[in-house]
Picture 1 (cartoon, helix red, strand yellow):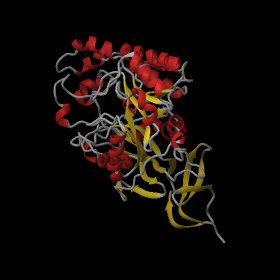
Picture 2 (cartoon, one colour; picture 1 turned 90 degrees about the vertical axis):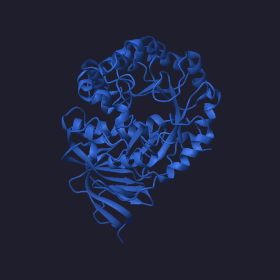
Picture 3 (cartoon, helix red, strand yellow; picture 1 turned 135 degrees about the vertical axis):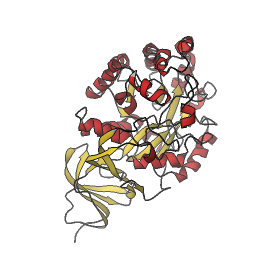
Picture 4 (cartoon, one colour; picture 1 turned 90 degrees about the horizontal axis):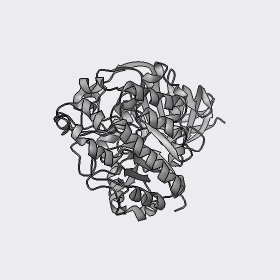
Length: 443
């Protein structure tokens, strides 16, 4: 009697913790039951993955989907559609919405709204001076991926700039907290350096020293508190070198934008559409980020998907807002880097699946292994496509990578054993569920 499954993904090349090679994936009741030769098995549904590469589902642990309060830029539904079209199976969404996500009621509201999402999801709680002493309770609520703190002001009103405030946050938490690490005091001093209409001055206002000073402060405070931190969107070569000696307390995120775009060319070509915080920097710093990937310092790739409308981005600097979309292009851009030999496919899988699972303590996701959720991203490593504004599902309707031809493309997105996206078509909208975490399972 042949073994039976609900779904078999058959004939592809699998990339997981065991390596890379031909294998089938057998799925039952939304979970992976077997990875191996299933040529004699039966299934209610079979997906022919011949010629395709099967990866664990991509997890984007930094997105801003702007709901509630800023839905003209993006909402949870449109952002999640962009995610699954890009091969992303789960996202962690940021708290700088209106109102901000800083209490249990705001988190509960987002979880209700998220029932419209096409992908699985979790939400950060924003750390503030007002809630700093209660974050240990908030971070353990179902659907919360952890605490996010802005040490430098960016989009929205969340800010904890002072050492005392950061220390209070760290004293309260049990899980790893995520930080936007720029020194607000130095940023305030340097704002007069902004030249009206000149986006190349953005990197001068928010200079590399602002990032390094903040990260040094943050690591010192984390050591004093005996707590773990996650440094988001690291942009400088000096931070990578420093953090390489502090991996016992600090994990590291880098973004496709900082790995791909360089200053001043990006600002001259894209103007406000290249503006983000921390800024796109020069080739010296980009080379440092790539060393961080090569040498294992970087743990996670996040898109920092942060959309604004074209009209908002067209305002003269510094009136133009910071942030760019990226959840739909994260995988295509990074697959192109794989095609050009800048990193291996195995390393990409570690940064987009295994890394988030380790850093955030995700339960049942982030690995293609027996017992885990059947989240799979199927890619065609040979397919060439040109990224275009008009193909972006984000409500903002643009990408900084417009016109870039990439090699490697996500062709199917499977979430908990359900085929959600196939060949640029979303088949199952509104199927997303909250991500679970190891430290909250006993609650």
